[in-house]
Length: 531
Image 1 (tube, one colour):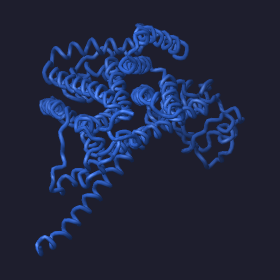
Image 2 (tube, rainbow, N blue to C red):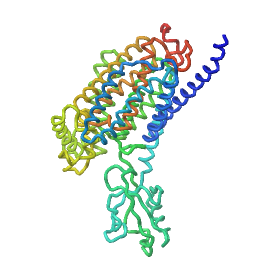
Image 3 (cartoon, one colour):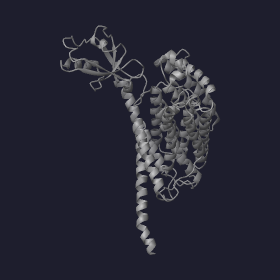
Image 4 (cartoon, rainbow, N blue to C red):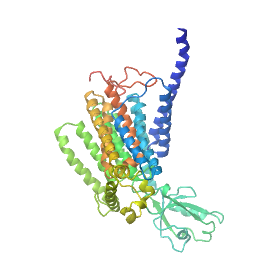
């Protein structure tokens, strides 16, 4: 009795420490969900904080805190083959840098182990939706208010031409300030004294006006003295974005993120539209429409059509009526026609435009990709090797377009950089995950678990859209997209374990949960008969 009593304080301290670590891990996961649509750097920091706290908790805890999942072996095989490719790379330092993106796969494991209840999954996904809506509002504001000033009519004899500013350049910052109004810009120049220089950040006409691509120019303090203002030798007009990109540097990255979350929203709406109150149904429908419209505003052909494909697949699985399923091919044709009309109107290119520079660049890269796959079949040329030693590979697209980029296709990129073995491992991982989601959809529907059903259905649609767009986009190498993908994968793994165990909640590593927890947070237990 005395020995047992003496051990109690130590056990209590140990349990308290584990609870604190559990709270820290959870807090970082919520921070990740909040920051992922806003800042990649901040999202990585939150992911790292959650991972460190969880690893310490695993090392501290005496009881087994790990559980298996259908993706454990595919993830391990994929990671080991990527590691072998990095070791055998002709530029190992560059390839080991690329392993940072490969290692993000463990975000799925982290999330799966730290979502102990369906309520927690619902909260995390809700925070992710909320943060994404903030990004949508910011994207709309960028389009309406503008991002800077576009320069035209530069006088070749003027000071602006002398410092390197040309027609179609975009001024993003003036002395550290964003100035979107032409009149305010001219007044600001007029207010400068002979002792004040003007520093501007400009982007040459490249299609995407982002600060990371900006260069600095300085107007000397005395250069504007005595000039007739408001005619400083240039004309400026408000620069408005034609393609939404929110906080990201490229509209395609934003589109890939939106396509997945819009699919999740649609899956939830399908699951709840006949099972819940009108406000919830309307809220989910409004969420889906907002995300779909934001996706359309990116004018990204592949993402829009992949999103349509994901939504139609969900309808096929959800609605078994013959006339509904028979109409789905016609709806996809309508989506193709609508996308064709939209991109032709606002971007000036067709859905398949062989003479479009983007298409020409892709085709040339794919042709050289096939050549490099044949020359380096098993472990590829190494991650980031072409980026850091591009002159070794005689890429036609680089020479013709003077642009160094990737292969614009996830399968081709993986095969070239890491070899056929890694590509097969990736395909096996994706196939295992897709089939797991399909089983989850069927199981959750049979057990009448609407929230799990909606999330599983939505993530299945999102995964389908992700894989479809990966054929013509290197979305698996985009940190924005892949962080979100593995986060949703972790949510799916957590829900899969709940279904497999036949319970509404998973035991917390540090405490047992209430036995009467419900599958949707409000309804009857999973084992209860359907009402």
